[in-house]
Image 1 (cartoon, rainbow, N blue to C red):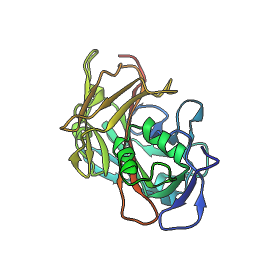
Image 2: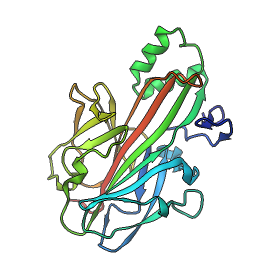
Image 3: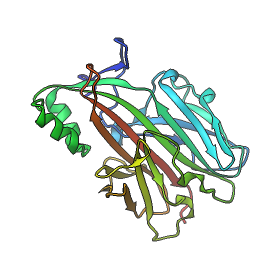
Length: 271
C-alpha cells in the first residue's frame, strides 16, 4: 500500500511520506502512570502489528497538542520533535490526577487505486462512503480523500483520578469516555460516546485494540443512535479505542473528508 499511496499536504502539491498500511494512530507514552513531577516520554505511532511505526511527519502538521488536567488546558506543542530522537517528546507531569493529552493534525491528501480504496472502506466500516461511491458511479475510480488525525491518551499521575477526561475537548471526531477508565472495577464496562462536530455520531465503527497484541482488533461495535458504545476492557495491559468517519467534500481535489480518532490508556500494574 505504501508504494501506491500519494500523500500531499493540504493545499500543497509537494508529496510527503505515505501513512503506514494500517490506519490506527495513537499517542503512546512510555507508561500510563507517573509520579508528580516526572517527565513522561511519548511517541506518536501509526499502524498495527508488524506494520506499527513512528508517525514521523513534520512538527507543523500538528495544529494542537495539549495537556488537559483538572486545572485547565496547557499548550504542549513546544515539547514536540517529531523528526528527531528516539521519541516524539517528553511531557512534564506537574499535577496529580489524570492527564488527558490531546493531539490534532492538519489535513493531507491521499489517493489510492479503486480496489485498494474500496478494500480500505470495507475494512474500516465506512458504509456511507461505499454507498456514495456507488451512487455517483465512482466505485471503479481511484479514491481521493483529505484526511486528518485526532488522538487522546490518559496518563494517571499520582493518586486520585480527575473527571475532566469525561468531557469533550472540541475535536472534530472524538471518543469521550463516560467514566474515567482508571476508576473502573473488575467486570465493569467502559461506556463511550462518539462525537462528530460536537454531536453524537450514530453508525460509526468503534474498535478496541490490545496495544500489546494489536495485529487485529479484539472487539468492534457500532455506535447507537445516541453515539454510544460500551466495552469491557480488562484492567491490565495497554488499550486503544479508535473510530474513523468520512463525508463527501466539495473540494475539487478530493471526494471525501476523513477523520481518524483514537483514545489510549493502560494499566501498568494489573488491578
